Length: 146
Image 1 (cartoon, one colour):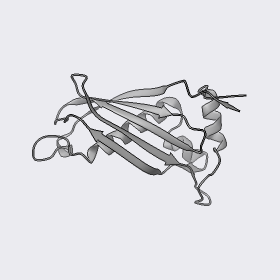
Image 2 (cartoon, helix red, strand yellow):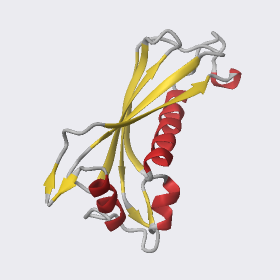
Image 3 (spheres, helix red, strand yellow):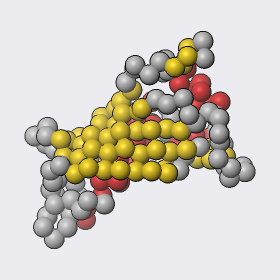
């Protein structure tokens, strides 16, 4: 099995900043960017056929074990932000996503990364090998070849 990690798989998704997501200064509270990452990851999953529901149907969950974010510029109430979610291929039994969030002017406001592992819904055990459904997805996306 050979890995073809040269291919970038990504998806962009727009969100509108809600009033409840801002602090008293009128800017997005830093903790909400993790939610924006999730919004982007869920949209990526639905678009590319690897959503949380797809994982559940195959007997797995994929909890986050690490998340990072770097804030560069603020978003404000009413802004329409673009979230670019990028899948980072790995030979390990995990999913790595990188994120770029842009303001309405196209300026980069936040970057981040999350790492997820696979847990069997039946046993609750960590999967040390790539689950068959995820291997099939990687083959379909051209990330694996014989």
